[in-house]
Image 1 (cartoon, rainbow, N blue to C red):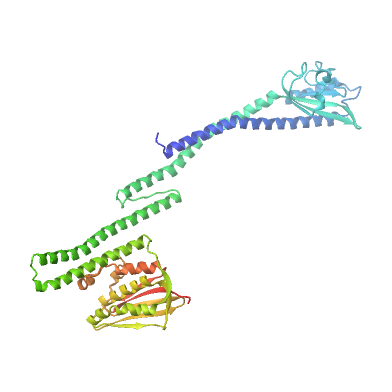
Image 2 (tube, rainbow, N blue to C red; image 1 turned 30 degrees about the vertical axis):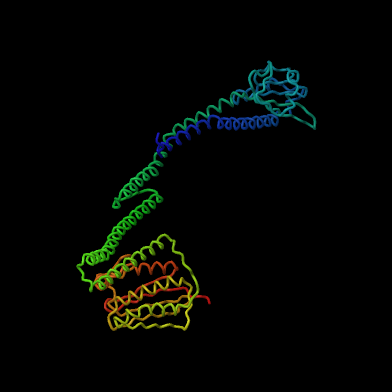
Length: 469
């Protein structure tokens, strides 16, 4: 049998019903019987005290009419089913409410010498006097510190048992009426627990099959609504990831196909002699450039993969960022000369110490300056500056080039994203530089932002933690 929530709930329900029924008719019956017995003992003691207070002056007088007193006790026997004995100090029964003559002048000590020495007896049987198990209490009557006699009251144990059964039958009848109500409660619990789970399972199966548009609408408990919202959000994110993967494959295919096609075409042309020997150096340089482009693309992908897997460890040290900026700027001397671009370095202090990974920060600076040169006009300038604000050092790379459109600003951090202008002006870009820069800065628990106006220019600003030195 398949172990479903429904089957387990049914089993639990039946076990609980049987357990309650057995408990009521065993341990519950014992508790009820003990309670009724205690109540009967208290009643007997109260009756004995009442009799002693009312008849104290007449019970043990020599000329007291015991037959009249016994007849008065007979009403107690009839209405309360309590048998009353008046016993003198010698143990002789001088009055009996049940039978006026049968036990008179019978000495209890002759039958059971210990009977009057106890305050209470349970399930007692006295041969010739008590013919069924009785609950008996003995109440001493003392006068002037001397024993005058005893008042003995008996109540049948069968009456306690009969009352126990009656009460238990009432409880069982109530339980039988409660059973349909408990079944309805059980069905309601199943409806608000198992049914939403089935809907969630169905949604999970739909999402796993790729149907991310499946609508999941669960009403009822807030926990299930929250779980439903979380599952729907997860499906939406997976859908976005699926779209991202498709775009990723498309972009990677495009960026690999273009240089590979050039390499293959030029290599075949050189091999079959289509390109004359005096022109081969030119096309071999193109092949080298395209190979370098593939190398940069592969390196960028590996770098991003390390950040995704949280395996890129940072070597945090304290260093002066000013010489790092100078060194990085010097590597673009040839590119700036070709476009007649001026690089202005502005430092707020002679030394600016930060806590960061030198190699990673140099990579960020390289990407941002390289990006600024690509989008700058000829005969323009690029400004690289530092600024201290509190415990942070802010580094800015600002160009006065073509700028970025509002629609593109939100997308520039996406992997492989390139504007149409970028693809037209720079065939060597991988579209990974800004993504890698953002990952590096965020791995330092810092921020990087962009401010750009189309046709005016672009400024990238990132923060670093100021060194305590």
